[in-house]
Image (cartoon, rainbow, N blue to C red):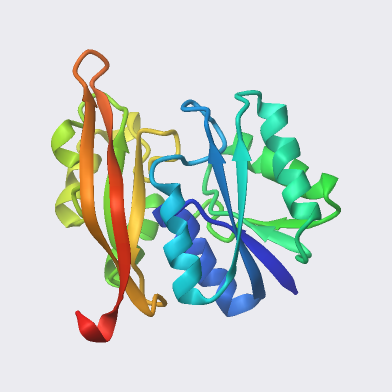
Length: 226
């Protein structure tokens, strides 16, 4: 079956892509660049660098630009992109958000396609452990939950970071699916190259106590030269 994978550059969508590559023919990677900072559907920070992932994997990259903050406009834009793809199904990295699952399934249904969520209902602790065990190189690119500070921005995901998240207990999603934090993958077991950050900047709002890590310039480097 031909599929397109919805990839934001974050840990969940990249892991879902890895799973899809073992089970389907991935004909394209689909990235949504939403200009709505509060989008409940799409991961925003640094998604433009998914270009580097698609290029190194030699997979066609489809990009949707969405200017509206209206949820129905987002769903319809995704549907149109799916219609224009050659895929028969879409792969997402959804884990527990019923809202996201419903909206992605609806977009797929409108496009007369199927929607697969290979990480659905997986244990957050198990998922994070698998990412570490398989040596995914992940950085935290945004935080928006009380107790998660500026010092986490740009930090690589590690057992110590997991311990920090665990301290928040049930008040915080360990995978950040509620927007508490977001991530970007620099390397994965199936990447033939590694993404190297050349220039970056931390943006922090002291009043709101949230912020994001902006990748200003990055490049991919074949692993044999690192």
